Length: 239
Image 1 (cartoon, rainbow, N blue to C red):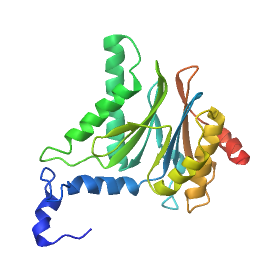
Image 2: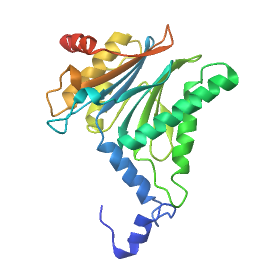
Image 3: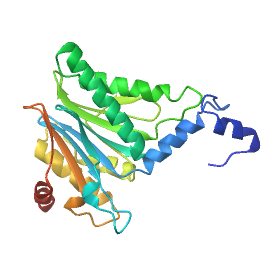
Image 4: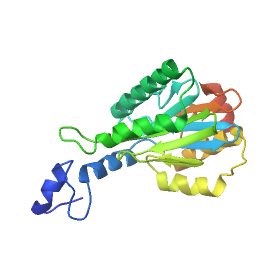
C-alpha cells in the first residue's frame, strides 16, 4: 500500500482518521492476521472444535514446541492468527479475566462476556497515542449456559459469533470450503474431520499429524482438552 507525501501523516498516526475514513495502522494489523498460520473454528451441537496449522518455517525447528490452541478456562479454548507475542499477551489477559470471574461470582465465565472483555482491550489500543493495535485475531470457543459458543475478535476490537470460520493464510479458500461442507447438525467428530480436511487442503505443504494443533470443548462435560498426536493421526486416516 503506497501513500503520497500528503497521506503519510495518516499512515503514521494511530489516532488520526484519513480523509476517506481509515485508520491505516489498524488496517496494517489486519494484514498481519492474514499472514498468520491458518486456523479454523467449528461449532457443533456436541461441542466446539479449534484447529490450527503448525507449519515448520525452519529446518531445525521443533514443531512439538509450537502451541497454537490453548485453554483459557476448563470450559474455554482459544486459537489465534497473527503476531504470536500479541496472541500470548491476550490469552494471558483472558485467563486473568476468567479466573477473576470465578473468584468473584463462583461460576464459569460466559463465553461472549469474556470475548467482549478481550475485544474492549483491543479496541482501546486503536484510539490512544503511544500504543499500537494488537496484530492478532482470536477464535474463542467454549460451552456455557447457552450451549456451544464460537466467537472471533479482530484487531479493531470487533467480535462476532460464528457456526464455522477461519483466520490466517488461505482464509478465503477455507471459508469457501466451510460454506460448502458445514452442517449445523454435524457431530463433533465430523467437525474435527472437516477442520483437518480444510486445513490440509488449503496448505502448500504436505501436513502430517504433528503439523496440527487441535482442541475440543465437549458440550456434555463442558470440558476443554487437546487431541493427542495418535488421535490426530487416526482422524487424518479418515479424510
